[in-house]
Amino acid sequence: MKSYIIVDSSKIIGKKNPHLFGSFLEHVHQCLYPGIFDPDSPLADENGFRKDVLNEIKRLKPGTVRWPGGNFSSWYHWIDGTGKQENRKRKLSYADDITREESNLFGTDEYIRFCRKVGTQPYITVNAGNGTALEAANWVEYCNSSGNTFYANLRKENGSQQPFNVRYWEIGNEIYGDWQIGTKSAVQYSQVLSEFSKAMKRVDPSIRIIAVGMGKHNPDWDRIILNSARDYIDDISVHVYIGRHEYFDSFGQVFTIADHLKKMEDDIIKISEEKRTNHRIGLALSEWGIWYRKGHKDDLDEVYNLKDALVFASSMNLLLRFCRTLDFTHQSMLVNCLGLMRTRKDALVRQTIYYPFVLFANETGDTVLSPDVWSETFSCKDYRYFPWPTFDVDKDSFQIDERNVPEMHNVPYLDVSATYDSETNKLTIIVVNRHPEKDLTTSVDLRGYSYGNTVSVSVIDGPDVYAVNDFGKETVKMEECQEKIKTGSFQWDFPAHSITMLKIQLKKQND
Ligand code: AHR
Ligand code: AHR
Image 1 (cartoon, rainbow, N blue to C red):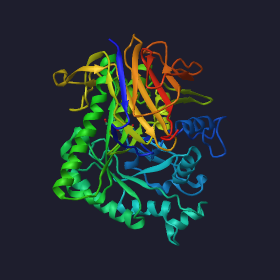
Image 2: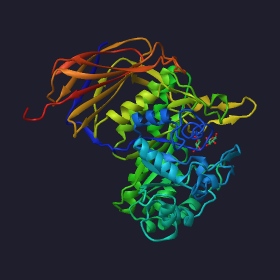
Image 3: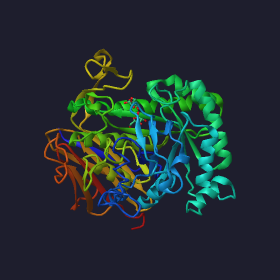
Image 4: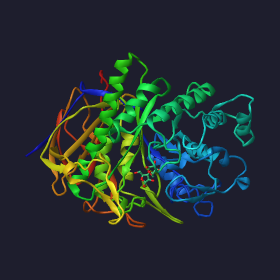
């Protein structure tokens, strides 16, 4: 069977937030220290940042980088990370299940410097665990105020005359969970939201507030927040981690992400209608990624294979389709833990998922289209994280009740997104061929567009679906070239287990 892709210029889903594809930097395991900050590395710059890692992040171009956690934020007192580094106090961090030592050498000033160096927008998660609304408001003052007050002056004393202008502030992290310091019920958290949001917005009314949501993990939580605290928030978040070893079932998990986002979108619309309000609430997928937990629930040290890169690209195709409501997504995380890269003291390796991130964050346009796709199909199971798998201590792994696992049929091997960029007048088509063995010959039909006969092509591929990248050995990589095409409609062979981006310069109306 031949495959077909039709991209029609009139089939528009909506506009994409330019910051949509972000990432996450947490003080956890090897992510921040030494992944980003390691003054002892021969590769460190004058600030102690790893130069090689910063260069890769510049290429990845995440729209926002969420910091400092994660669970870490439910314990973190930002003032500890300010002032001269030699005077900062080392503290015990008991934010997660594992108690660690925190040097506090990387604090707010270092974070902002990091954001400026790599060209990303800051996105801060404040401590709603054992922190207070006052502490959070003081943090906003430290970052955003130009006045003559204590915290604004403290920032100036620390070397930054100009405000940092941090626009995005999330209140707490997974505050519903027992693993969190300061766990709260939905009713308690709604109260926290109104207190924090009021105090923080009075310091700077231009900030956006993101609330902790649960998606399908617990829809009642979201409804309670949306009913009682909606006037105080601008976005509601959800965290979704996926990861299956079985080849086809791992694609089934993309439906899990869709499920969470759809459920939340429906609730937002329903409650806005009931409340008769025009105050827009958006969605933030404030942590997502592939996390197998390799049998142990806190194992964050994932090595990704080509299959994971395909799942990752399919997930990002899906995220584009939610562009009308989805404001932020944070792939978890930048380095080492579930990372886009892994580091050693003197070396770095790009994981397989690095390359799809580059394409989606850098190459997708501002308008998301809805292409039609026909291809051979496969069946898979969707091992959704709902109900949450339970951790079996004896087996030292997560267990899922197989009776609750839905089956998906007629899932096309080709997974396609199309975006148009009004600034460059280019069309970007990203095609994931999920067939593990077969190249798929496809007829690509672009309707309503006029274009020349060349296309810029990027292909991410590797020798087989379980191929991984290691230090000094990159087997899954991206290759780029220019190819000739016929205008109107053309044939394309999408290689087995690959991600292909076709980027086409369109002609102006009067060309
Ligand atoms: O990514 C590690 C942890 O996973 C984060 O701290 C937490 O938010 C999530 O559950
Ligand atoms: O699934 C929740 C996560 O499980 C917590 O964030 C993490 O600490 C634990 O491993």
